[in-house]
Image (cartoon, rainbow, N blue to C red; front, side, top):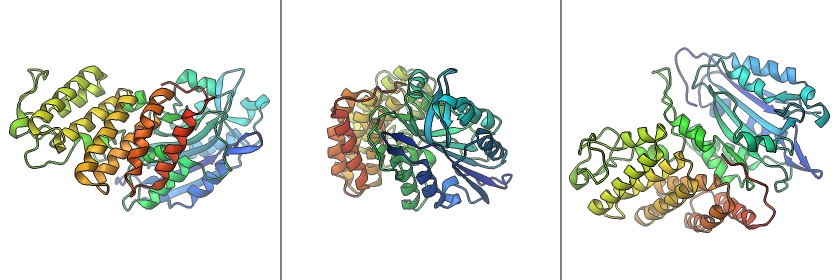
Length: 433
């Protein structure tokens, strides 16, 4: 979030640690450690705003009503709000409702000792759109995981942007330290000279966290597609962020001499690429930028039409400007983002890897565009829920990351670790979205 509007006087950061996830006496997720690490980050960096900010850390709470009171206070703030929750996700077996387990929660008394998940959405429902970010680092137990499989997601509120991960039960044991997702979120905040957008932080953190196979990554593909076309109600506030860190670069590539249809949105293509390729509807002028039309098709759910048009333009640009031209690579990236919007993560991963390799040859390993394409490939690969496509594309992704020494070395290490885990037998059943 980046909010400094004149009518917003204060922001609010609420960090909540629920019960730890423990398996066979080994701590898999230590929410208290996550909270302690986040509390060391300046509130301005967490919130993405220089407004005066109230920060509340709630660790060790045993009464759901205590947590509810804090949620209610946070939701009442007129400015931007960041809500972070970490801990064990459980379920009431009788009512089949999800809960955030609190300190002292027992399975026989979930309804009385844990926080009902719908309370979260109820408190955030009245907040203005665009001012609320919910960040989740959770582990589901054996009672909650089947419900997540049934729901396919973990909604918080339609008024909030939700980012996070939910690990399945029985994942590889940890040591009770700060979890990978939260740690990499913090690392990106500290490393970047300019605060990245929340969606960029999420994509990089999820890609580098070494998530176990089958982990649920939020938002889901469907939710990302729904969010892409959302308009912000306040014209003085920023427009909603693209749901993928590479999306803006792909759809709004830099204008270069002789650029064809990959110029900035609203700028007519010039040169030989301006001619209409086969498959483009007659209603689109030959000299017009096709990307807004293609993007509108995708956000409207017409993914097949959008993909076909993008492929036609890509082939056209390849033949007019060259197969390895910057314009052709930009169209490969647009196709990758379209595949991501449609939930076709195997295709998106392959296209991002191809675009990254092409940029690597042309621009070198230190170019920001190369790193951004690698982040796109890594992010989409982490969304693969089925073992076969992840194992198939994993070695190529590992080789690509190995060719980029300037990237955070943990990306390569954790990608290799996830690939090794995917190759191992006895994986938990994935959540399909």
